[in-house]
Length: 190
Length: 162
Image (cartoon, rainbow over the protein chains, first blue to last red):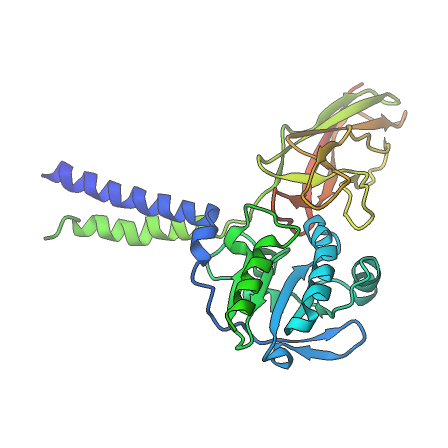
């Protein structure tokens, strides 16, 4: 009887350790509840000094890409974000890049000018806005703003998150195929 | 029904559970030394040291020469130490990493990164064991995500023999 109790205790402990270990690896299954949640509001300056907040875009679909200039995935997506902006600008869709922890001049030269971006690039100088989007418990071994690098978020006109690229972070989607599919679905249902 | 003896519950909550919580927040590591870099030299002698880094499975770091100027190149550097001349590191040939949406493959390092470093000692050096601080600056990525640039600090051990 004592042996059985001891074995059950060890089993429970092992299961707990294993589940916690899996938590650091598996990211996809942890953030399935994000869609439909209210997006955190923010207010950031753009490259010409204007204050821009998410609230300004209430009533629009908003595509947000969290970027840095040195991130090759972000650079690969930049031309496709610009194309998306042009293709959807008359469909009530706004595109934004939130650059994390980089100086204005660098972002202007290496992101805005290099990719000839016609939509606003906002400066999240301390990473707090990027961090505010990071789902709790996902990639706990990374800084919260770091979790969000190269992520895409789609927010509907009511301010609710409808697409979150961390949900499928194993498959890089430079051409934004999945995001556009979700956007088309939302636009078609209006 | 009480399967768990009280002592076991206490052990679980006070010893095991805090340990698992700690394990969760341990910072992710991308690079480690394959072995401690060490060299034996006579005064006035010159030789090459090979510093071997292991890049964790599933990750790569940007190479020392990047094709895209936006990217952050890997850089190995050493603190200066009296009596020792450390030359420019010689990096290996980079691997190619192909990414969807990008025509030109990225130049990256993965798996084992062996960097050769020329080291020369001054003629006047006496028998000693010197420790020189080294630093690898790198920006890691995996197949779908990139991470902030990081520094990996290590010690280079040089034994000066007579």
